[in-house]
Image 1 (spheres, rainbow, N blue to C red):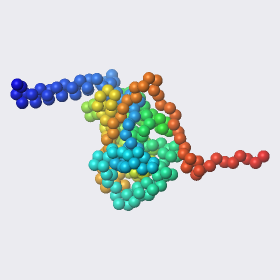
Image 2: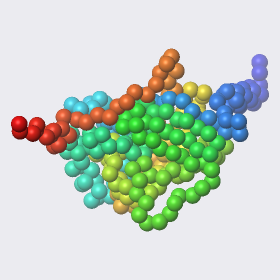
Image 3: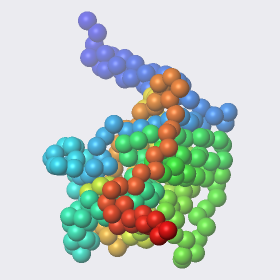
Image 4: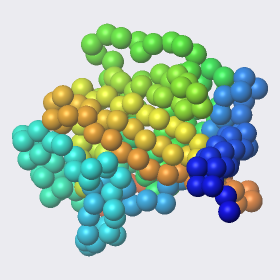
Length: 255
């Protein structure tokens, strides 16, 4: 019979060996850093609503991806969120074909592709063909008071095998999901990208906005690599019927 302390030690060594083996199998660049290149997609229902929610007419049920389940809104901001929710069928910026923003583009239920080199990562989203650059060359945000970007400005650094990305300088034109969760120009996101295995990424992010939320809060979602033969992004730049009703085509000129 194996002594219990010895058995525990052997189990720990086996687990450590397993983790080391998994780390050795993930794709890497020539400089040894993890290579996230590929086409990725979530299977979660997070885009319908970040928080846990029951089935409703416009959304399937979902467990949410908010750590702690509840987004900590300031009172006035919560009232605005409720208005957004009530008008979500026409006010969601994505319905106009606008870019999804950060981090919504990551957990939107369509694929996106990452191209990576040592100095940066380029993310290309199927919806709207938005293109985002994450700089990993040690440069800082541009600074200034009026830098307002649809996708923010992304600057990454490595903590071991985890890519940590600081995203700032947003405008306030995007929502976080279809349920009307939103942010202001003070929005700030810190993302963490980490391989669980060669074909699975754990994506987590801390979100803060002093004008909208009472404290920072976190989300976590799993991304899966597409491995189907000849899989590729397909153009998707949709405009809804509601948008067409607001901006009807011009009538033909009289003859």
